[in-house]
Length: 416
Image 1 (cartoon, one colour):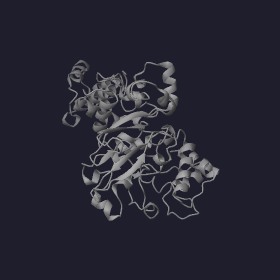
Image 2 (cartoon, rainbow, N blue to C red):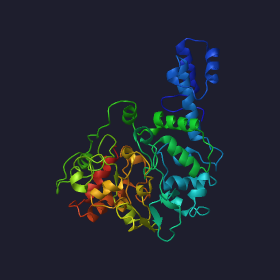
Image 3 (cartoon, rainbow, N blue to C red):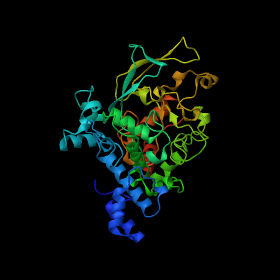
Image 4 (tube, rainbow, N blue to C red):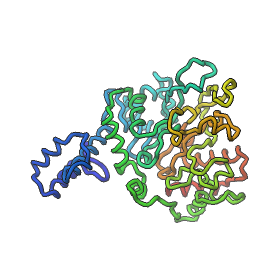
C-alpha cells in the first residue's frame, strides 16, 4: 500500500510536516529519505521526530500488509483482515472464488498439512503445532515432542495495544513474540529481524485499523476507559443487565455475563465471580466447556499431565485442545497462565485442573469478529449465547435463559 490509514496519510503527511516546519522542501525530503528505520523520534528535534514516526509507521504497515519474509507467500494480513482482524468461513469461501491460489490454502490451512481445504472452508480453522512441555505426554505416543490442534485466528481488533498477553493459550507475552511465531509457523520463514518485529508491533499498537471504535483508540492512547453503552431499544437495555457488575443472585440474571467479562476491556472476572466459580477477581482465563462439548467433533487425544504434587501418578485428560495448559511455565510468576504446583496444591487441585482453560477475550467489537471461541464453533452471536446456555446447565447454575433473554444479550453485544 502507498497510503496509511487513520492517524497517518502517507507521503501527504510527510509533506505537511515539512511545510509546518517552514523548512526547505527539498532539504526535508532528503532528510526523510536518509532517516534510518531504527531512528528514535524522542531523540530527534522537529520536524525530524515527526518524519521518523511517519517513516516507521509506513514501514510497519508495509511489513504487515505486504511482506512475505521470503516464506510461503503469506503476510500478516493474510489471516488478520483489515475489517475484522481475523477471517471467517464466509471470507474463505469468497477468497476461493476470487483467488484460489491464495497462500491461505496451503500448509496449515490444509486438512492434513498437505492437501484438502474442506475444514478451512467450513470452519476457518488452521493447524497449530506446539511443543509439548516436559510435564505433558501423549498417552499413545509418550516420545512425542509436539502436538497439533485446530484453532481459529484471534482477532487483532483492540488486542495489540490493550491486551498484555496474546493468543488463546496466552503463549505470547509481546507483539514481537507473537509476530515471530506467526512468521515462523504460518509463513514458514525465519528471516524477520528484531527491527522488523518492532515496527510491526508499533504499527499494530498505533494504527486506527486495530481498534473497533474511537473510544477504544482513545483509551489506548491514555484516554478514559470505555463504558458499557446505555442501550437504545428495550431489548438492548434488557441485554445490558446481563453485563453489569452485580452480585450473583438467582433468579435474577443481572450481571451473569459480567462475572467473567468485566473491567475496562470486558475480559476479567469481577469480585462477584469468586463465590460462583472460586477464582480470584481479575482472572482472565476460564474453562467454559468448549473443548468438553466439542461441538465440531474435532479429533481428541489423551494426555498424561504430570505435576510435583503426585509425580508418579499423572492425570489423564482426553480433549481436542488442552488450551493454556500447553503454555510454557518458565516465566515470571506474575505472567504465568497457571500458578505453580505448590499454589495449586493449597486448593486441593492438580495441574490437570487447568486443562481446557483459555484466555477470556474482550467483548469490545465482538459483533465484527466472528467466529467465536478457540475452535470457531460459534459462527454467530446467537450460537455464542446458545453455548452459554449449555454452560450454565452443565454447571448446574440456577440460570434459565429464555429466547427473549438470548435475543436481548445479542442485541446488546451488537452495540459493543
